[in-house]
Image (tube, rainbow, N blue to C red; front, side, top):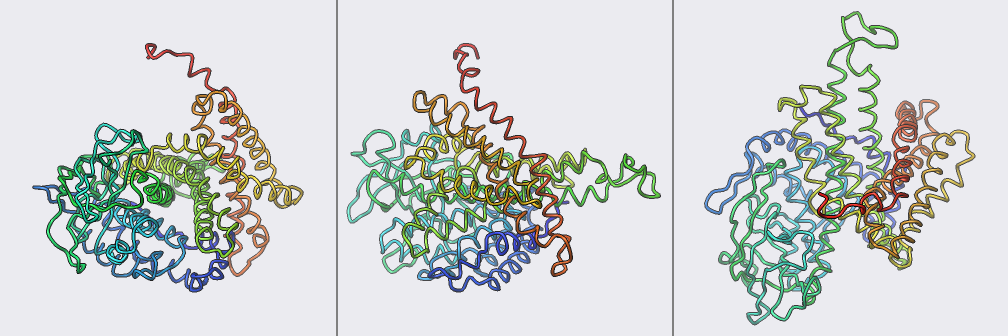
Amino acid sequence: MQIYKAPLRDMRFVIHETLDAEQLSKLPGYEEATPDTIDAILEEGAKFCEDKLLPLNRVGDEAGCTYENGVVRTPPGFKQAYDEFVGAGWLSISSDPKYGGQGLPALMNFVIEEMVCSTNLAFGVCPLLSGGAAALIARHGSEAIKDTYLPHLADGSWSGTMCLTESHCGTDLGLIHTKAAPAGDGVYRISGSKMFISAGEHDLAENIIHLVLAKLPDAPEGVRGISLFLVPKINVKADGELGPRNGVSCGSIEKKMGIHGSATCVLNFDEAEGYLIGEAHKGLRCMFTMMNGARLGVGMQGLALGETAYQSATAYAKERRSGKSLAKGAKSADKADPIIVHPDVRNMLLTQRAHNEGARALAYWTALNLDISTHHPDAETRRDADELVQLMTPIIKAFLTDRGFEATNLAVQVHGGHGYIAEHGMEQLVRDARIAQLYEGANGIQALDLVGRKLGQNTGRLLRHFFHPATEFVAAHQDDETLKEIVLPLAKALGKLQQATLVIAQKGLGDPEEAAAVATDYLKMFGLVAVGYMWAMMAEKAAAKANGDADGDGRYYANKLKTARFYMYKLLPESAALFLRIMTGKAAIAQYDDEDF
């Protein structure tokens, strides 16, 4: 069975000790976000997810969503859990208090998303999209639209979706066919079909707010001709009450590999009433508000499943007996030892653990900067934090989901044959984790975004927000005897990453394919080094308390240092191989003609 207890000790270590998130309570609007408040949220969030959502995870996978005559029903127990989830305020934790939200930092929403998706990823899809829809409307919607829709998105009575993909186009949105015709009085008639719409139809909320990309009659060609429209499932009357059903219907739901508890829908728009969000022909710019938020959320899904995979595999490895310890013979009087004594099993478990804990720090660091970018009183500080978030978004999305998928596969391997059958739930984790590498922009697209947009943006200024603090940290601690064995490997990898960045930038100017051919390798290398930087920071905080029983927690800090060493010795060296791959450029790929395949 799947095992999960929220890693509250590790969450607190990252939030309070590594990142000093107490600084959030000093920002305007976040005065209530004190350490005590944060800890209380952690405790209550853990209870809800462990007690309410985890027991439904297998139910959702086995029962799935059902579709009949345009009606979608979620698995047994999901509706009750959703009502309790929104009733407790978990959906609105970071929403604007003006519209019924709690106004707490985005960092806390990241933490709750991690817990939710660790226990029930399919359930977590709907709240993630609703939060993204609310953020988009808050930033780009008119005051009337905000007043009408945001309170209901905050209290969960209405949910949200993003409608981009069509059957003939996914990433290349300039090819969409969906049309929007002006109908007067600010109303547009939306016609077309969208597919792969997560939570596009369900029985959790009384209304669903679709954010739809479409083209006006006078639209320019390509992405410059895309506009964004808000299209409710049920029309809203002038007094705010629900009116008649809009021209939106669910044509079918997909039969898919995983996340069976979340309906992935084909939606048909038949002259549905819609309302323009932002400016005409500039809808993609608005949609990126939701897309980038969703990409960070999907990155948390990778971390979340990686954590459940690690905890489940560790519990199994401590119980399953097979073979004897090679170090001392049998360590027990029994005929066989628990498989956790075997080096290969330990290596798999520590690979999961080191990536999970490092990824958690990287994600929370990004979330902290997201909060600074929106609430810090100094404009330049806000800009710098926002640029760091922009840089890290494709890395969080792609690297964390790649490693999360790896962690679920390792959990299957630790379980052996028992991992391949449904009884223990490991194969479900693999199936669920696979989608995170695909939706909200496949990971290859994230790599292209990193090398094609983020590297050169503002003459490389985004990169400086990572390279400067990382370089300063290395310089400050490379002679520290306690940290030297951790900092020196980071220094070497960081130097190679900077070198690779320069080579990609130079080659890419003359030939964009040179950058594209190594983009995925570069993102992986960047992710490894970024997580290495997080491990170095965590090691610094742990080192002072590892030698002794500091507050009864000395063992925790000592283990944190051990895991930092494991990461630097066993996982970070992968960056060296990636560097060599990057240096070869596109030649090995470009030597083939299309006909050679």
